[in-house]
Length: 222
Ligand code: AP5
Image (cartoon, rainbow, N blue to C red; front, side):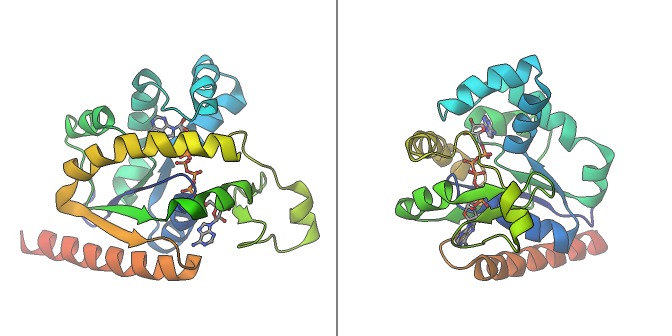
């Protein structure tokens, strides 16, 4: 592990802005972005047995079983690039057992960012979300509209982005978040996620740069 690289976890309700902020964090800090949801959607897209099983749970807004998720994320996390550049774990761990799987490997974040967004904003964010299959970029019809007609015409929607499903996903989130909050108590920071994308990033940027300074100083003095 590279002591000059940051290790970051980001959590928050569905559509709280994790993926959007991760794009910005990755661009500025060069961390390796590992999104549990994206890894699962890639399994679904390639049609693996794990993907088929995962989809059944994702459609119900429930957590995919640990047998599938824990090793999938662990393998990605232990690859050389993530160890050298630092990692940005998005949507993982999401339960007590997942965090324990990491603790048992001695894997802890320098900082755990929890995005706070009021429930009433989440439904609107989910139903307006669109994805660019070519660039992977996240859009919103109202808040982050596509730059041109060409992009607009190819945007897609996620199968679990309906009002009904986001309510189930939100329940799952609230059932699990408290256990994570207690495990990462010493490194957790709450960030208000209901301002503009730029303002949210401004907050996160301040936190990450001070966290990085602290880490580098600690390494230099040891
Ligand atoms: P996952 O893909 O992680 O979905 P999620 O947690 O529900 O989060 P989202 O990706 O929906 O939202 P986000 O917070 O990234 O928001 P975004 O930036 O896109 O997981 C999907 C499923 O996979 C789970 O339900 C579960 O079944 C399974 N799974 C995943 N991880 C698992 C795990 N660890 N264990 C077991 N199962 C797991 O933003 C949303 C929208 O809002 C966008 O349109 C965006 O443009 C807009 N927006 C963002 N920020 C702002 C802002 N500040 N102002 C206005 N609009 C904004």
